[in-house]
Image (tube, rainbow, N blue to C red; front, top):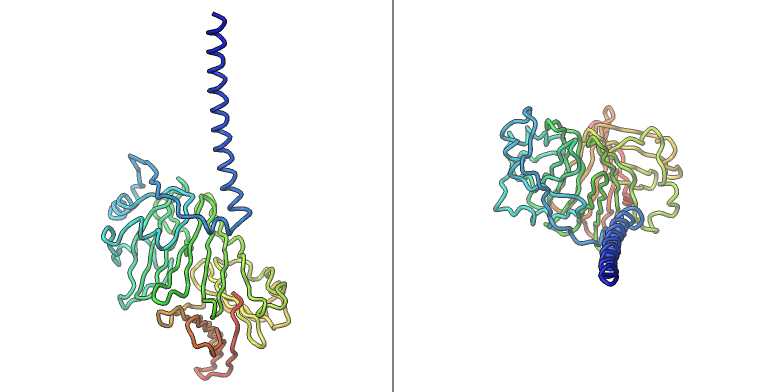
Length: 353
């Protein structure tokens, strides 16, 4: 009798210890993932894509205010859990081209895609819905992919549960025509980390990381940018740290370039337009800019990644041109200023970011 009692007691204790060990292992695993995001960006960057686990919702109920055509599109789109590492390759694995058709012009209007990015009206661009991400019950998150003949991007786009546009962020980019730039992301419920690698060893290579916060209502804000900067370009990195209060609000830092006279910063704003801010070369960006221009636009030049931003200021046009694809003797960027369509200033520039 006593022997059986001790055998049973021993079995119960063994079971309880085993459960505790498994719980501890799961807690440790969760802590590792948390620390990876917070403390070591590079560890996250090297992680392989997590499997596309579809959240089980047997009876999904969508708002009656959503167009039935859009509801049908949503129901036929994979719903992926987070955390997930999202890359251009992963996007294709989620939905092969044979399984997905380009979205019609009417559907793009339903999705307010013109608020996400510009579409080439020549017909060379096409947009597809690659996936839905489950970030929250408070809003709907779509992954929309735009492609043209030489490059493609994926955008994380948040909508209200009635499919009203909230905002968006670019999470992948692939310059597959030239192989010059590549961008991918690590996404969790309230954090999006975007990694950008551009250039080659011979030609102005860089690797930058941007952290975005997603609040409980689907709004996306930039937290900070971790930049890898060439020491030859930046003798005094402190001048690029911090921002004057007049330009602290923006969606994404696009570029920082320096000429022989100016520091120029270009940001994309929450409405999709671009802002130009400049300082004299001996100033810091924490000081008030000497010139701020808004309502700028972005223009592609070919399929090799070259592009430029135009900003109007009365009769003056300011153009910042960036050329990742160029001859070895050419400058990576330049600033032009026109007055009544006549060039009055040209400065070669280095790319800081």
